[in-house]
Image (cartoon, rainbow, N blue to C red; front, top):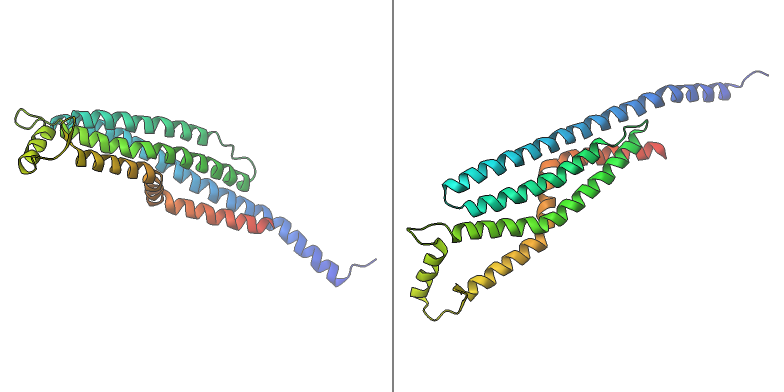
Length: 218
């Protein structure tokens, strides 16, 4: 039986789709690999930058008389690097497979885990950074006397009746505690803001790519 013109057209389109589909899949696969590889490079560079900064700040803090700040900074940044290096190793283990869609889904799962861990850590990191700065300048030598004590003495000259807690003005203690609470509360948001500045463009590209692939799969 001879094929109708309609059937011939249908077969033609099917054959065309069969040829085009692998090319499209390959294109999306290459694009997703390229974008995620770029993210990996940036992530790795940022970790290296944090390590370099931690050493540099440790040295600088010693010379400007706030070694306590430098030591706490150094420890906190190395903890940050430790956790994120482990996360990067997990990312390297993601199998490229045959499907760019599955690869992107696996990356999104990793990204959500990475963000969750760092948000929790940031609620602790930012208050600790503030405390390190406070302690560093409080115990900084100021003509043979800690800078904090010298500051309290000057406050007492102007306000002799101010209430002290272990030699520290109560109002100062309240302000410090308030700042710590705010940093702990907004630490996760500060991290997300920082994350979007550094990686926001890449994440948007990956989201667009994911949307395109999902629309093709329907």
